[in-house]
Amino acid sequence: MSDQLRLRPVAEEDLAVIERLTGDPEAVGEQSWHGWFDPRTYRRRWEETGLLTDDGGTLMVAGPAEPLGFVQWRRHPTNRVSYCWNIGIGMLPKVRGLGYGTEAQRLLVDYLFAHTQVNRIQAVTEITNTAEQWALSKAGFTREGVLRGYGFRDGGWRDAVMYSVVREDLGKERGDMTVLRPSRRDQNGPRRDG
Image (cartoon, rainbow, N blue to C red; front, side, top):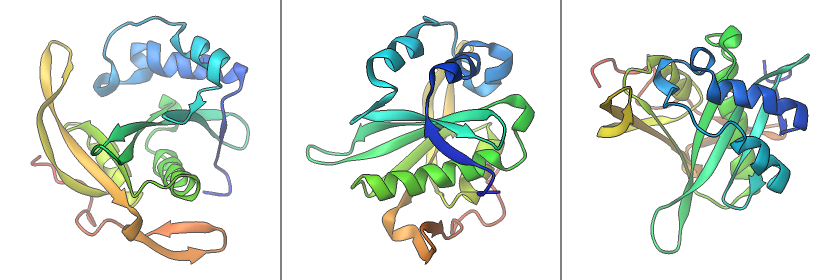
């Protein structure tokens, strides 16, 4: 699948996909819908920075014929002198469950470890989002624990699950692409008990 999928900078024509995946409740999905916001946010940021800065960025997940979604990362301070990347993903509904999100997150990990000096990449998802937990596990992330009352959505506080990958988790080299070992804790998918 990796030969079919690639990450690339956001072009102006891609903004419609990003705007749909962040502003259309049906396209976003239940666990990622947090209400309406300024629909021009991404367009303004793209005009100013191309959605790539030293503090984070957005790349398109491109299939052979069309964009399938996007991946993002942002700087998350870990102490006064270091930080890690916190990543997120948005995939079009028609390609969810087909493995593209897992592969896109693997490609993003490879990209960030190759082009930045961070030691840790993390992702947080709602505890009920078992599809994303499974994708993160398959992408080589390790489940670290539950974050109680972490995010507000749909009138209530929701628990979340933290996943991470560190450079130490990198496996052997395969050509020019780093291969992640499967997560040690999540060989059979996400735990359903939180």
